Length: 209
Length: 209
Image 1 (tube, rainbow over the protein chains, first blue to last red):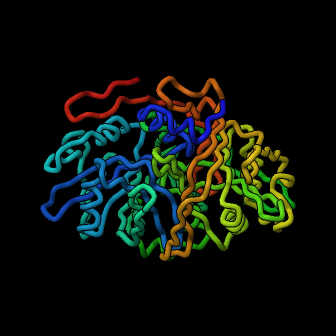
Image 2 (cartoon, rainbow over the protein chains, first blue to last red):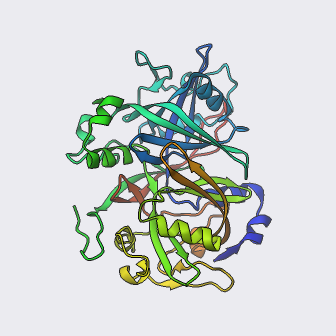
């Protein structure tokens, strides 16, 4: 089935949203926790988290300033700190529910039954039910002119991971931690390992490790 | 297990790379196909593709200009076009092998046994073995000052998907298409659907769809 740019243009709006959202492949699923200066918390599912680099440890995400992400963006710029909490198979329904358009004075924590977890000296709330939790400081901001979205880069300052999910070589077993993957806008998947492959070299066959 | 910024700093280099690369959650796995003006092709696995928007249809990726991604970046800026091809469970070993440091005059297509597929009027090569193939035109470029990486946004101009993988509402069944997810640097996963959830509203329970 071949679809060209013109055919994409002619798609019905919601059909196009579902179709194009499927094309990047599997997406990460994280809960973005923030708070404003009046201590009003916000929690929002984000599917656009992407690794930027390990040294310094950086993650980025794309935020739509005219969507329900708006409060999160305002809050993280206000306080300079935010959390990212892996969505696991235990909490993916509550995580999806955070995408509803709640008013700013309703916290998605209370509305979805997820629990705020505060860490001394860190401004933003974590999600207690998440198995992997990251605390970040805002570092760099790019306005994506082409569709008026915002690209936000943060530095990882705090990490919680289950003891039994960190390998001797540093790899975190996110499958064992129950982390889910997203496809499209609304489809959640668990994973099953196919293989772990050795570092690729031009003249050496790959090995399963 | 709690790890703070200082503990990350003290990690051994490769341990830190594996650890931090695991923290964003599951990643997409795509093969980036390019060609230079001397018709030398290049194929490179990328795990940083991220959805930017549906209208216009935009995908972005992070490229490290001092890594094996260098040739891909030079090529796509030279010709203005590139392809992204989903890595499926049939080809993930060859896809991983493209990350080896081949010299510029060695094509990763030939070296890994993947097949170039050319489409009339489009400059960059597709991967014939991929079940989902996208052709993109370069649109916007941001230099990420914080770690000297490049953020490249392209517009989707051509799409091939299997006929039986497109739902009535536009969602592409990438699980059925065999698309794999990545975690860390080198771990490949197949997926199994947990649920598809309805559009979230503040005062209505979610439904499985």
